[in-house]
Amino acid sequence: MSERSERGQLSGEILVFDDVRLSFAGVKAIDGISFTVGERELFAIIGPNGAGKTSIFNVLSGVYRPQHGRVVFDGADLIGRRPHQIAARGMARTFQNVELFANLTVLDNLMLGRHHHIGYGTLAALAWLGRARRAEVAARAKVEDIIDFLELEQWRRLPVGLLPYGVQKRVELGRALAMEPKLLLLDEPVGGMNVEETEDMARYILDIRDELDIPIVLVEHDMGLVMDLADRVMVVDFGRPVATGVPAEIQHDPDVIRAYLGEVERA
Ligand SMILES: Nc1ncnc2c1ncn2[C@@H]1O[C@H](COP(=O)(O)OP(=O)(O)OP(=O)(O)O)[C@@H](O)[C@H]1O
Image 1 (cartoon, helix red, strand yellow):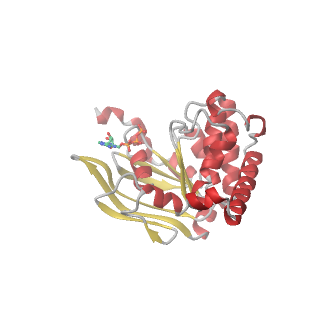
Image 2: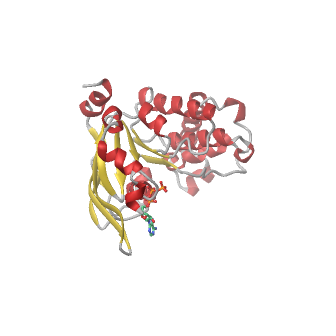
Image 3: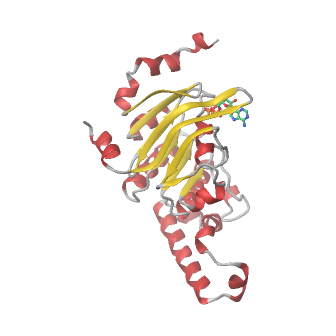
């Protein structure tokens, strides 16, 4: 057994996605998908356009409520919980398109990621009570750590909207890390990036798993990146599971090859 599959299987499970089904007016976006993610695992989900990958993320983060199935995160059932409740439980997400406050600086965008951790009401904030002040100082220290970790020093005081695209994606990753997540959902983190930006992002993703010990669910079209980074890969097509396994198994699975090359059957 490879080191990758051992790491995925030896650790406990942070996430259980069990026989989930989700339809929109007859379209089966998710049609009976199950998987688990280990506490130290980098789990990738791949599949052709419209396969259901984003729908899986939307179920995980509470945007969509499935008609059937169970989602258990860190021991708690998530179905029916609102997106902000799920985020507060420690599930952080980045988006296909950068979703940051373009006019705010890198520092301020990262501080906003800490928002739910600060945990004081308006009155306490206005009165600048000791507890609020300590929380603010701790938040600032955490954000400084992330700026170091993602090598964002040179841009920290600049408005995000002025930065190169690859750096904006990195700031978005930083904002998710500022939540101190127990699980990170990355939706196409290298989409639209050039080769150098992609290599940088791949390194940060690996460091997040290996140094920060944060498990990751990754949706990505860049097959090379997925096969290089993932401990395990799940392939979906038409909302259904095609195969799940370590990258070497997945690359040679005839059903996977058919899902990617079988466009003729689809027509
Ligand atoms: N809100 C919605 N209303 C209606 N249909 C939807 C909705 N969201 C997703 N779908 C449908 O569900 C199916 C799965 O879509 P989804 O966006 O999850 O796929 P995907 O694998 O993320 O695709 P891509 O790789 O293009 O992002 C598609 O047929 C899509 O049209």
